[in-house]
Amino acid sequence: MLVILTNLSDNLMKQKIFFNGLNELRALAAFSVIFHHIELFKSRDHNGSLFNSTYWAYFIEKLGKNGVYLFFVLSGFLITYLLLIEKDKLKKILFKKFYLRRIYRIWPLYYLIVIIGFFLVPFLSNTFSIFKNTPYFFSLISTQESYSIKSFLLYVFFLPNVALYEFNIVLVGCSQAWSVGVEEQFYILWPLLVFIFNKKKTFLFFLLILSFYVFLHIIIHPFVFSKIACFFSIETILDVVIYKLLLIIPFDFMAIGAIGGYLFLYYNEKITFFTKFRLLYLLVIMAILILMFCPIVQSYIQSVFLGILFLFLILLTVNDKNNYVFRNKYISHVGKISYGVYMYHPFVMFLVFPFANKYFPFSINSLVYNTFVYVVIFTLTVIISHFSYQYFESIFINIKDKKYKSL
Image (cartoon, rainbow, N blue to C red):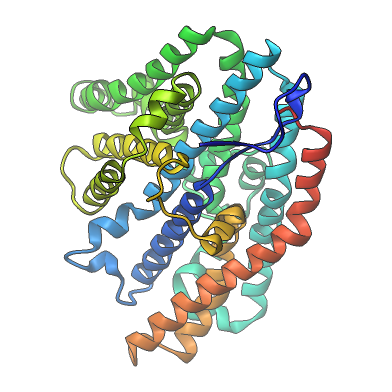
């Protein structure tokens, strides 16, 4: 439920909006991505990954993307909700303030990670021999194309998703930024859409975006490969457009969140009533776990269903009348610094795995190896993210809150 930190008055544009419980969801999403990446790296270096487990393989394989999809649904929900409130109260969108707020929050840490990925990681790898103990990382760092001008410019201009999915550029310590690129592209487009369309058409447009992606996945995409591609030796234009659109800019999950933001704003009483029940909360969590562990329908459709369940979870979580939703001040703090947790953890993995492989090899004692890897990576990532938030990111957060507040 919405918490208003200042009373409504004639100056109500100076109020602050905060949703309880969302930081906990951010933390869980960030931890999911770390868990996935640790097991993925172990698999690539043949260190007994859960990717090879009979019971855990599907869950682990999808866990990272599911964590990112939760972030996307959250972004769609929050950004849409805030933009709609701003438009309702001001009869316009304060584009300059919106974009500057995003810049001050996202860009400083993003560009720090780009510097780490392009300069610090290869320097450390080529200077200290211990990093040769991670063959997969070391082979990636030795790939010259990853550090080309093209790669650098794609990252500088917030196109890491294009670098990863179009050119297959995997940059150690930096490729996780693909989702930040998607977020930035979403931030450019979304306020324009909210501004252009009236209230009813805005909702219909969100539905149209989601339906468009689902339609492409279910009908057109298989048709392209089965009917058209067989007549051409090269990719057809339609195939390229569809494949790249679906893979590189997954706005469908933002659209799911946007639908929730719209409904929560304009049908708040009904949403609040139906999301206050413990049974519904438990059923949603159970359904999420089932879809995360068990492949039931076509992969993309299952992801969409999961995205919708993530939206239900968000609506349940922000309802302060539901006394059963998960709340924890420590996990909430991790959620508060989750941008850093998400961005720093690959660099931490780059630092930790060489020591684990050299001093606690999996082949000698798998329990010690896994304990060291998980404890050190999670702990070090949270510590670095905490100090980054306190002494680096907060500088820019304070500027955006003081100079560019719109709500």
